[in-house]
Length: 324
Ligand code: F7E
Image 1 (cartoon, rainbow, N blue to C red):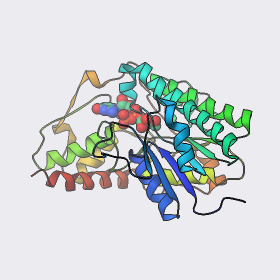
Image 2: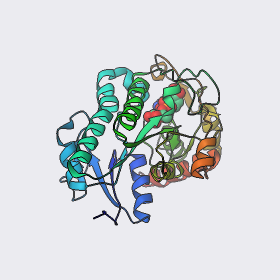
Image 3: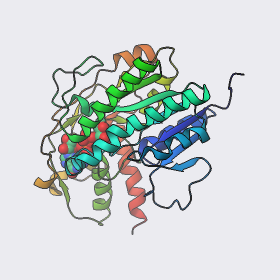
């Protein structure tokens, strides 16, 4: 008999920014959401019924997690996702971000064979794969030129996903997401590092902000908008890959302008350059063309760059006030 409601989703990386927004999004649609958390997750003594400890660098219990959660959809958001850090931890990043995806694909494929159930797989691919871009804007057809161990690992994972789709007729897709931020963004990423510093500087809790390359240009969107696209990709009849982006480019300087303006300060008075924050190889500019997503998924971003920066600063002002 066909397995019907409720829909069940399994999310790796559920404790990260995208895991948070995707869980909320799926729950409002009636999904039962299961998650994979790394053993270093803070504050979780024993994982609950729907949370499982696992590490993408160790596939030994992924099959068991599939058997227990019996998901209709798997969202692979888990990764070592910090680009600068991937230069210091290249092999670890390749293992977790690259081979970890393959471990998930193997576990899903074996589960499908064991249970006879179909599983739809979403792979969190990244605009970093375009790296030293060969054309602008970047589309689903733009060749990759990865510029970091992280980006190389994501290219590996991208092709494994396509190979499982083509070899085993699996519904497996890549969402090639450009930078997406929110108040839940990790503090080591540049937007959140800035919004947190702006709030703390405004309240007298911090004096300076050290940054690397502030001329870098990115296509920044809101994570809450982007997770909807992940879900839409898994609701299509045919599995296909999509670029998800705003199509608008801003520099780190632009983010500094909007964030510091919001609290009526001039960033030039507070920002200093730290050479150690530069990357051995930089991705200078990324700009995505999400026409295919707009036309096929009916997806488009809602939150603007300026709204995003102000939302993040407002959130961090709230947090900083608690430090007073
Ligand atoms: O850097 C420059 C830095 O670390 C953005 C990840 O989610 O998006 C993210 O990767 C830019 C870079 O993000 C600092 O050099 C200057 O040019 O916020 P980020 P990212 O490297 O673009 C993609 C799509 C992913 O897939 C990744 O997982 O900002 N920058 N000064 C700085 N960056 C950081 N982190 N810290 C600085 O102090």
